[in-house]
Length: 114
Length: 119
Image: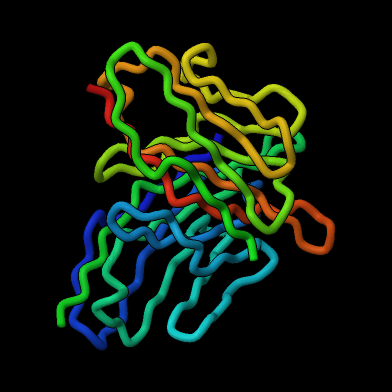
């Protein structure tokens, strides 16, 4: 099965700075990599995703990069704001036949200091 | 689009009782739904994959007789925690795979979760 590692477990940045969160995966067959943001007690929200045929994807202040050779992908948040403070989970697809499952990293708590 | 709801949002029950949690896709048909469990400050752990009209597929270590899953329609999956005990207290979240252009994608949208507390 797939194994997704996410480091570090916490990250603190000053408002306005950039934040970069990195994840590694083990299964070279994985081809879909979403990022979710979860605020305390709420549902995980999909913020951006990338497929393996693309190296980078951007949506306003958020971007994701994928390095298939090294099997890692990163979330980039620019001009961070206090409302970006949350837990961020990366995930990778693991396929078993026709079924597709997501394996999640342990999550990173991002704190944006005003 | 792609809105997933869950009911109830929280429930408190006595040890030994059963609790049913509903997961609904509001604006799309969800042939595949997933049930996750999340303990405080931890990641999402997949419990089972629920396919409409067929038996659920459980992850290793998840007791299928304790966590009953029924996916009887294209918009509803239910999780029943039978004979609940305090160690079953957790945040249970469902998700659904969405279709784009008629093709089932890998993208999952999550419900708001159900906080279960077993006394």
